[in-house]
Length: 235
Image (cartoon, rainbow, N blue to C red; front, top):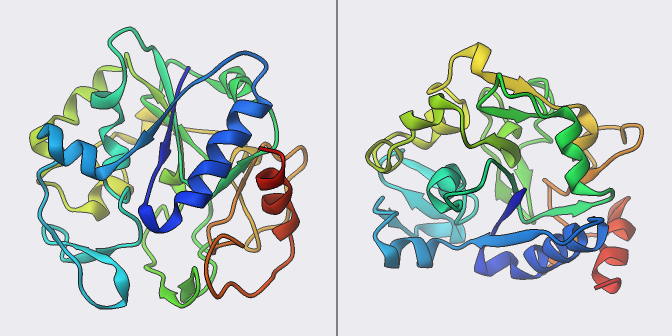
């Protein structure tokens, strides 16, 4: 399984910890790559126009909306970033810590679906701000795309052409409007525990620090910070 980790220069420390925790928990070596927007622009793959407005957030012109990270939209390019012989891929946000062997997610893999994710309920938003006073945007299927298991051989992914990915509003991508409901499968909650938003599920496998964590300047300590700090120190 090929693993992709979102990368943002403002949160590179988080991506380092996420990558190290995935590799450390895996029982066999993983192929792990970072999703870097600059590299995708340089290759000509990503052509969406962006500007940087106030509050330090990129603004996606096509969506007319802010991007909380550089990989807000580039995560959906996984089928174009994967190797030709990859059958499955896992995408994770940079602010995660693997608590269990990520390869065991394949026990839940189902070839009927193009993508599988933890289907968080609408109330799992976490308040109006995140990551040291950054505004949080509420939308249907919020946080579903932060951990995605991709079935790279599924024909529905052919809809994600580079033309579509570079023209579709980000809200349509995150809401998976390009998939039929029966093409989008579920993962058990343990694969995307929203730290400080939800109670910890039994046998949590991925801790997702969606509201932020100790890698951020000005972060006020919160419960479960020790999970991230221990993963950092274990690298």
